[in-house]
Amino acid sequence: MSVNVSVPASDSIDWLLRGVTEIFPHQPNSTDPTENLAQRLAQTDRPLRVKLGIDPTGVDIHLGHSIPLRKLRSFQDAGHTAVLIIGDFTARIGDPTGKSEVRPQLTPAQVANNAQAYLDRVRPILDFDTPGRLEVRYNSEWLSALDLGETLSLLATMTVGQMLAKEGFANRYKQETPIFLHEFLYPLMQGYDSVAVKADVELGGTDQKFNLVVGRDLQRHFGHAPQFGLLMPILLGTDGVQKMSKSLNNYVGLGEDALSMYSKLEKTPDNTIKDYFTLLTDLQLDRLPEHPREAQKLLALQVVTQYHGQERAIQAQSDAIALITKPGQNAGGDSIPEFSLADVAFPSKIFQLLAASGLCSGSNDAKRQIQGGAVKLDGSPISDIEVTYDDAAALVGRVLQVGKKRFKKLVN
Image 1 (tube, rainbow, N blue to C red):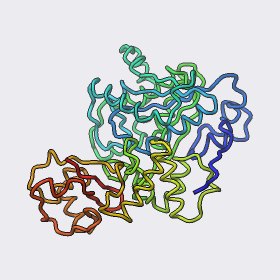
Image 2 (image 1 turned 90 degrees about the horizontal axis):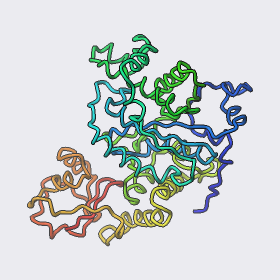
Image 3 (image 1 turned 180 degrees about the vertical axis):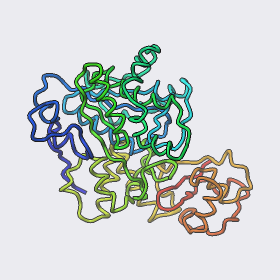
Image 4 (image 1 turned 45 degrees about the horizontal axis):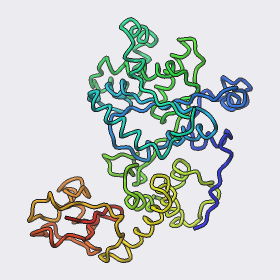
């Protein structure tokens, strides 16, 4: 498949704003660099400091999380400095955005482990090598140094009414769900990060607007020039209906093997495929294949290449075709994710095996998938939930599959 993948000049404002849902402040006809980001970029005599904060509250990072990171890379490529803030201090509180209840507080050890996993996952996205293009900062550097007096000064910048205007807090207050005082500190601390690193621009999802606005307010309070805010959309999952989430099993993880990633993306629903190209690739949108199936394959190939390289992406494409056309004939070669049968207690029913392998979320889910006709072994459908295997010998080397996107090669 031959497609022109050239992109606009990396420092063009159109390219930097590709996929952006909202920018504030935004006065496109103004020549004032405090109101118009294009003027700010044109008039600056130094690289802008572009901030993205992430809280390492978990290690499951998916393509939805990659969107602001890819935008951060665009600013790097345009010659600006990416300031990636690891919220090792704020992660102990947990961002209350979109949460109907208080988040569990993490230990410093949990946060450190998650932070390292996060950095490992984002290396294919950001430029870690060019001097001056990336600062990785931990907000415990300045937040842990705040004394009680300074914390009280932060609290004095916002009223309870302003805090309750935050959607998540407002909903919880109306529903009489407890809101703990430490949660009010989160947006203030996240906003204080912008003060500490002297951010010129901050990136975030559309659900983070409140926090970015707080950052602007605090910068004014401390006598700094307020940052621009750029909001990126929340990515719909592979079901094309709900936002991408591991809990909804509609996600593509950045740490997934090439074949799993490719197989999920080549089934991208028609209603989301343009957004996926816009937000997850650098391809010119006016030069995409017109045929939906060709567009799906190109999308899958491009995204897998970013995380696994071109050679493995092409192999994943070939293996995905083989899984459909040559089931049971070592389809997919060595790139199929493996599941060891060593820890399975035999005799084992098929639904127990599906749950143990992670192909299904549990026994009940496995039974539903079997009864729905979604389960195959070496390409042959299995419809009886009571199918039982006495030992591993009957399964070693075979491919267990659920739907068209999930599969495991069974090994000793």
